[in-house]
Length: 308
Image 1 (tube, rainbow, N blue to C red):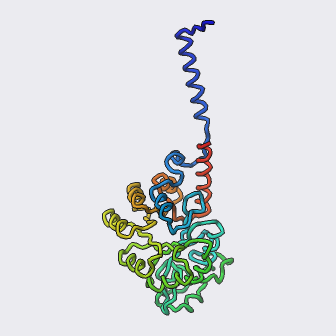
Image 2: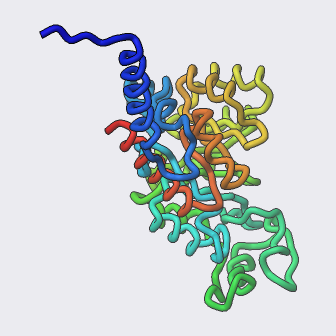
Image 3: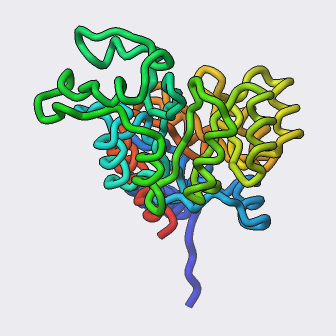
């Protein structure tokens, strides 16, 4: 049987088939508010840095939330006193990879977790600089009541308390405010947590001192200008770097990944998460850890649906 198709019929058939396949393609759904490029650009991360981690056995533990690290800035402190044991405990319960811990030293040489140089913002009616107060004086302060009555008598924690709380459960992103390095490394060694603490440092001398005192400790340089950052990458060969948002760029990520370093960026706000992921970040330091974990879950659901 000879089947003859004239030109008008062939044209109609082509238009029909194109419309059919276009309808199928456009009907595929992805969760709202997710980056359109995420499925193809980044399986949240397949970078040179990850290859280095696999090949050379990175001291960093694998991320808990879909191949993307979540760092809780000052703990999970929404309606909880920041830099407190309850805030760190809540972050651990949420499943973050690291809690960010600000470290200062008391007058009598004890390490405590507090962000500001003075206590003024934490205790109404009280004033004083942390380095001019003894540990006993600092521990007598109630830093919880200003947040709510349920947090009355919450105290400034010592670094030793935080190490004990986090050991085996969560890493520590150490933000050194003002404290000597060698005694800190000795305390970390005492708890055998050299690979659980990452040191966020902007100063070359501080990086050198940590490396001298604790070669096993994990350095995490805070990039400055591009030229000096390239030199830092070459000299220290860090496993991870930690830019603030204003210094974060696609080029910085590319430089870091080529050098085998992961990138943990400080968020600007929740709206910056999409851009951070699109530009290749490997982790985000956030004030909203529960929401970031949920966002990452949706990203992976989107990726899975695209693959299948």
